[in-house]
Length: 262
Length: 154
Image 1 (cartoon, rainbow over the protein chains, first blue to last red):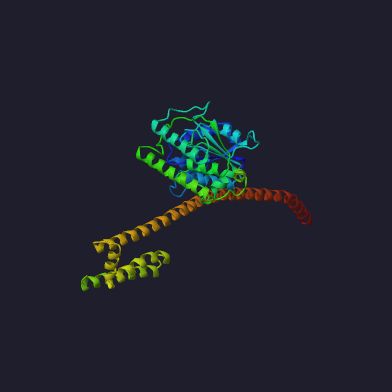
Image 2 (image 1 turned 120 degrees about the vertical axis):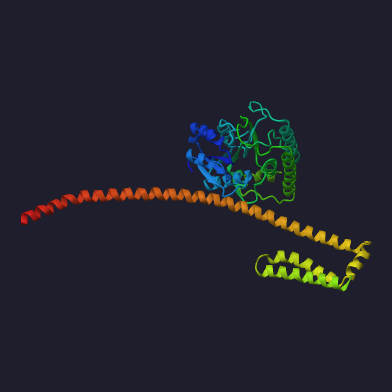
């Protein structure tokens, strides 16, 4: 470990975009204060080769495990590497690297109550954020998840589907444990879980670009509908588990402080 | 129910029981899973030996067509077994993912350690070479003096 910040980039068959994105990252001054790890989720194209050639740290899954599992591998790596902060971003270049220092600053900055946030979400819908035009289908899904999160946890989140997130050590340490993180579909359900467990969640404006190459995880009509149903059920499951005290409690009581107050 | 049909049902029940027991002995199915299949086998055998049970149950549940009760029971048992299998599948899938993730991390650690070992080895080789050269340099004047002594003796 050289730095206290680790950037986790899960990648699956991103040969067309990952090279350009990593070159941007390499040329920036981010390397002076952050380490980067790319989790190759058993890509069948040249993704791993590109990453290796550019000299980035690469962890390859033996076979495809999915986006959530790739993130969890990154969290485990961050725990063993004794990092204090983690920023996760997509490898397709949708998340601009200018978001990294902003999220990093926010993770370290104490709020009015004297505590820094545990989870920082880069939002496309806040003032000062820059984003591409979003399809009606996605807008409906985002509104739906906003409503679901608010109903379950009374937390107002403008961009619940954002993959651009910054996590402090208590959060990724908790996520890295077996069974604490949804390694199939980590989305609104994880936000609800962390809010219910008392972790401090904050949103900041983010800069995002339209995907230039590759295929989105949620394309078509049936798949997103199915995804919404799964997510709704998964969030309900988190809520019930919280109410029945079945959610694993955080190891260190940072996240649990608010829990006790409640 | 005819005697022939009764014999067929009972034989089928015993055949299924034998298949399950064989699989259990050969460790192809765990005891707990085998039990899920053994119970229906006994129900088949019991139904074959005492067919009147079906008729009595049909009367209790006011079923006009007794075989419908058998089908209903079979569907419920199958449903429970399939559910149990899916449950196990989900648990195994989760554990499988965890293991694969750990393997990926360990592979990376092994790779890093190998690189470090290589570097240390090459460094120690360089150090050894340097030490040898230094030794050689310090020994050379000694050798010269010996030679000088030898020359003087001759």
